[in-house]
Image (cartoon, rainbow, N blue to C red; front, top):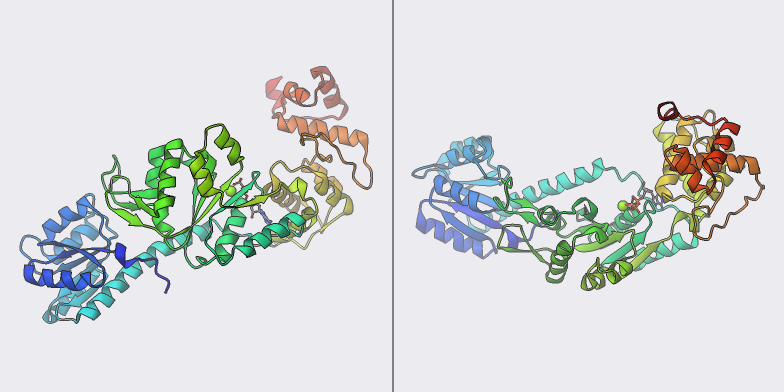
Length: 475
Ligand SMILES: Nc1ncnc2c1ncn2[C@@H]1O[C@H](COP(=O)(O)OP(=O)(O)OP(=O)(O)O)[C@@H](O)[C@H]1O
Ligand SMILES: [Mg+2]
């Protein structure tokens, strides 16, 4: 079992009224690098549990004030204010009171240990409970990941660029070097990140991703990434592990890294340098060991030059860069990808295997894909849904709204003519539709996109018989 647990970080609250016994046990556990604090009864324990996070509670049964069973009931069932109900609990019993131990398990204790047990046995049992609770956390993470279904694990593509990327992933397979993945939106940055994780030394550990763009506020970012102690801010009822700690012995993927506030950039830099984090509102530094992957669709160097991204962080982040070129710069991958997605969606929608007519593939090849592979994937999904029979035709591709010209959005303005030539009138019709689509079917804006007057736009709309449901409202 690959536990996620570093015993150095395991903190135990020992609840025991026999001070001499408690001290002996504390010393024994310290040899296994458990950090133990002692509370003399249940009431004192609850106070401690409210004040900080413990990884485990070990409690005696019979104590003055509040006994062990009552303590378990308070933590597990009554949800004592501000106490983490998920903290694992182990009960200490005398040989004579196994029945009480069973009662404790029914209330939610994880295990019981007799007070006479050998030191080594106690240590082994406690470790196991700790590992199990770590496992539960890990399972939760795994389930999260499954729910997000990384349905496409395979990096499809045989272009120069794709081969280079696959080679680079192989090159670093044995190391935990930090990687900066750059590329336009939808180009496959996350897919590449997951591939690096899977081929790396931490493959069996968790893959935890953080979308920095979703955490613009520094406090939000900190509590999500570094976790927080109870009471760190209003509403922080429980101690919570951050994404950093969850990624321990695995991979932390910081996506859209350019979107971090300057303040958060500073905190991340410190964490990267010291390999420790401190939870929000906490004082205890926690050692974290993980692999870092970063992604951005911006040019980080420009961000640095313009003062939005810290230069010192840039050097930490940009250790091994992998750039994914836009799909329009590696068109030879388009047929492979189109076929791959067609097969995938055919299975998903229980349809037969599809073939692309030559003209259909030509249209797909020549489109400029501002949304890259994600856009191609969506187009193919729409084609599969609408298709009748097992052939996808050029007409069907036109119907899903693909402009047949390439490069219109490229700064060079170069338009390539497909091998079979093209129909100028049809190109015009497609361009008018594309412009209208881009402009939300506002004719004035669409006209501006094509650099023609509104009258000329209107004439074309009439000529091609174009209509949009929203126009009835607008005009
Ligand atoms: N080489 C590839 N082979 C197969 N599928 C791919 C490939 N690259 C990307 N995809 C698919 O395209 C979609 C977009 O990829 P991904 O989410 O990795 O892009 P991204 O660069 O992270 O996008 P964003 O910038 O929007 O976060 C996903 O469904 C992914 O599975
Ligand atoms: Mg992404």
